[in-house]
Structures are given as C-alpha cells and as structure tokens.
Amino acid sequence: MADEQPFTWTDGGYALRLPPEERALLSRLLDELRALVADPEGGEALRRLFPTVHPEHPEREAEYQRLMREELVTSRLAGIDVVQEVLARPGRRRVQLDEVEMSALLQAINSVRLVLGTMLDVSEDDDVERPEIATSPEYHLYAFLSWLLDSAVRVMSGELDGP
Image 1 (cartoon, rainbow, N blue to C red):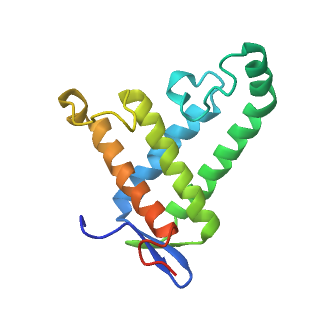
Image 2 (image 1 turned 45 degrees about the vertical axis):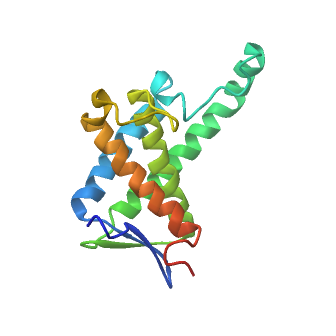
C-alpha cells in the first residue's frame, strides 16, 4: 500500500482508503485524544493543541482560557465525533467523505500527531531520525499520521486527484 495514497478525490467528495485495521487504530487514537482533551488537567501533552496566547501577560492568558477553553474543547470533541462516525462506516477499504468530514478528519489526525510530537519532544525542525526516537513505536505512529496528514492536505489542495 506504500504507493497508494490514503486520500483521493472522487466526484462525490473524498475517499479514505485504509484497511479496517488501520481505521480501527485511528479510532483508538481518537478515543485516547478524546480522554485527554476532555480532562481539565490534560497537561503538557496538550500544549500544542491549546497553545498559550498571551505568554507575556498571565492575567490576559487566564482570562482567555476562562472564556475560550470550553469552546475549544467542545469544538475538538465535536470534530472527533464526526471522524469516529466516518471511521465506523462499513466498507472494506474505502469510505466516502464530504468536505466537512474531510476537514474534521484532517484536524483530528493533526491533533493526534501534535500530541505524539509533544510526547516525543520533536518539532518540524528536529531531526526525527535520532535513534532514540526513530526506533520507538510512538515515532512509527507519528510517521503514519504524518503520511496520512500529507495525503489529506495534498488532496484537499487539489494536488492529488483534484477536481
């Protein structure tokens, strides 16, 4: 499956082409993300999902978090619900998505990837081929999610099988 892109454009929107086992893996990762996001003490793992907006002004930051955090959490959880429904659809290897579902899936994949990146302490500028990272199961998940994310962005931008 290495040459086959997981996302393609179709006349009806988009298609996700992953075997059921890989869709089940994504679903489990989203269950874990849901638990982290819903936990008010989600901690450092969520740092990249909910970045500090006013680092120089703790009072403004506290007010922003008080006003916006619940809305941001609700939005992320609603997106996870959409993606869970998509992943649960019948279909051996192909699932159809509309624009809203595709956007939710892209955001969810990126969210899990950001949490894993935080756990691995990698950034876009890091050399993730460091042996202590590259051999870990978490890194393999990170690479899988990066591959999915790249394909989703490319198909949504029209680079792959665009309309």
